[in-house]
Amino acid sequence: MARLGLQDMLKTPLKSSMIAAERVACVYAENSLEHALLVLIKSGYSSVPVLSWEEKVTGTVSKTLILDAILGIERIEFEQLDQRKVQDVMNREVPRIHVEQNWLTALEMAIHQPYLCVEDEQGEFLGIVTRSKLLSQVYGYFRSVSVSRQRDN
Image 1 (cartoon, one colour):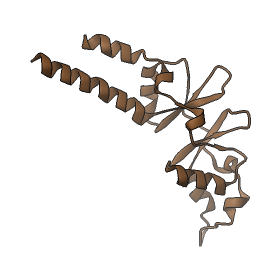
Image 2 (image 1 turned 120 degrees about the vertical axis):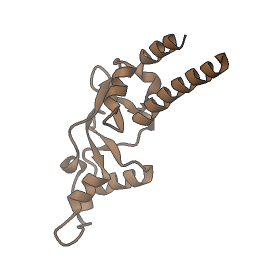
Image 3 (image 1 turned 135 degrees about the horizontal axis):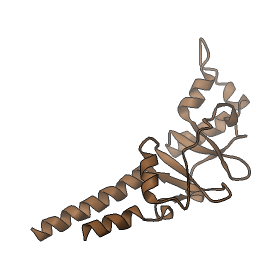
């Protein structure tokens, strides 16, 4: 029975683990670094997706990338925050997954990423799947197996 549960979990549609785009903190490539830093600080995240005006993921931006961009030789150049754009510093290697891919693929990809950007067939941003959500589901499965075995003994 536990084995069947595991197979069901592995075949779970990715949508069931996804945080919808409307609920995801993100910035646009044309936003200033100041705006992006404010979003990052207010949201509490270290990295967020970067979108085009067409709602397609074009990169990710982090506090570290922004701070590296304004770090001068002798001081932090805060004036750069409103002069430079997110697209100038963003990471263009996006951890992305198609909405129709399975949960196991997402788990494998999330080993090295805190979140994956979920896209549809047209490349439109649908939301994210976080590593913590996937691990929470794995933990829930193993916890239920453990409780079940304790009851059987």
